[in-house]
Amino acid sequence: MGSGQTPAGGGSRTFEFLWREGDRPRSSPGPRPGLSATQVVVAAIAIADADGIDAVSMQQVAKRLEVTPMSLYRYVPSKKHLVEAMFDEASGAPPDLDAVPGGWQVRVEAWAMALWNRYQAHPWMLRAQVSQPIGPNQLAWLEALLAVIKDIGLTYEEMMSLALFLTGATQGLARISTDLARAAGEDDLISFGEALAAVARPDRFPTLSALQSAGTFDLPGGPADGAAREVEPNLTFGLRQLIKGIEAHVAARAERG
Image 1 (spheres, helix red, strand yellow):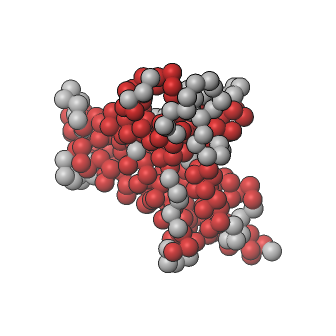
Image 2 (cartoon, one colour):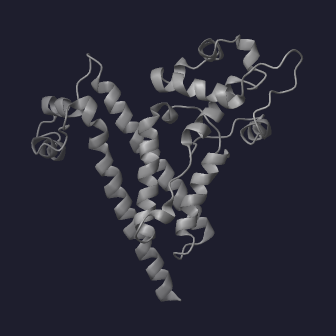
Image 3 (cartoon, helix red, strand yellow):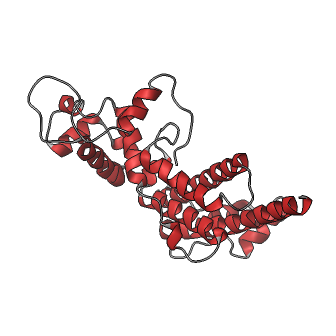
């Protein structure tokens, strides 16, 4: 579920931290405080949920837990490691796709919509700087999707390409929806539809003008409330067209033998 490049250096240390066994503090002198790495991560997530990822700092997390900032380093090597762990913890467990009635097509859509809802619940995840999806929960999401598509006729390379595309498309559209919601709450900005109404003249932008006149960009429930509802149908439409394309690709391969 993560995105971006693995930072140079420290990759194995991040991996070891994400796959740590238990919540024991790292070796250091002094009495053992009554905290755990998970408690530190959960506290940081609460800050990010309330005020965004930029509000997360070791100082703010320590303040929330009523400890000194230096004491947190017994559990978290650095802020970078904290953010990595936050992303994996907030990812949570993937949906139980075995419980979703229907074929692989319905289950792929259910997976993507569950990921969409996860980002809507934690918008800061879309802006967190994380490495490759190597955390336990992130790999569980990938495994859940691959298990659904492993027998539909794709090669292993195609399976991974599809998984990467689904993840990226869902992330991208979720970020657009959160950007729209944030922009709608700023007094000095207008909605996309309002902007088009002002400048999309038929002689210069004929297609955009036609869509605007038809009410395509109207947001039900107001700009801030309607942002996610405006973007979500685009995800559903794209998913279903992609699935049709995969079906056609697999069928064509089967016909060729």
